[in-house]
Image (cartoon, helix red, strand yellow):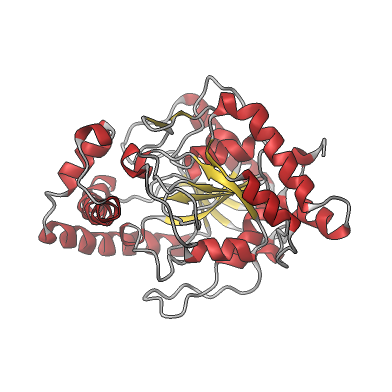
Length: 382
């Protein structure tokens, strides 16, 4: 397939259904691109090519992405028989015996997993340059970074290895690499894609799983498959009016849009970034929407101060589970400096501090939610 990388996932699946191409030909096209480009980009940390070819030869699952190659971020989600290193030398020997619940849902969509994509160590940093695997490069310019922590997934999609890839996001780990690589990156509502019974809570709801894609419709179609209620979940997700895919291309009506260049640090953005958001706001106004400037007006320092002990306690608890799987405590040389420092600090968080932070977050987020009663869309820098 000479034009393999020109199509999104739904288009490729349609070609398979119509008999224009086989799933094996798609997998071979993905493998060819990986072998041609990944020596430079370094996005794929585990290759499951033989497994993918075997899957492509078998009858396909009847899903919207039947026969479409797919990569899985090397963080959190389990794939039967695959390593799950979280981008860390400490986890080099960890292998999953079963698919996680969300991975089973990805397979229900019909995708064929072909490998794991690089993540920063435990998803901590907003770029992917690990002691375990090295730096991932941006396909648009290998001298630039792809962002992170889902930088391997974003580079794989932007380079045309696959049209869609698993990713996850706590403080921007889907959105940052999507922006850096020119992709669609959606952080979904808490538990819209459930953690399922085999996953522990991601930092009390901060972190969510979804995908990075070339098209909006691929993101919507995948969420239609994976974003189903989980029986027994302690968190009820808001019901949806209908398939997300049906919303793509539908006229939204006249929206109330507020835009702002405010940043959590209080420092103004660079001139080119400020100009970009102003130009976008003007374009939305020209389309007929009600557009005005105005920030959220919240205390970002208080928000981050509340988040820190909650995320810290969660990281320490998650590392305790990882340490149990590895069978020993990490040594300083097992972890990158930032990870080691984070672990040491996180272990000092008391229960009182963690729950104080959680209580603060509940109150602060109520304030944010109330702000959204006055508008439909908040256009910001990230």
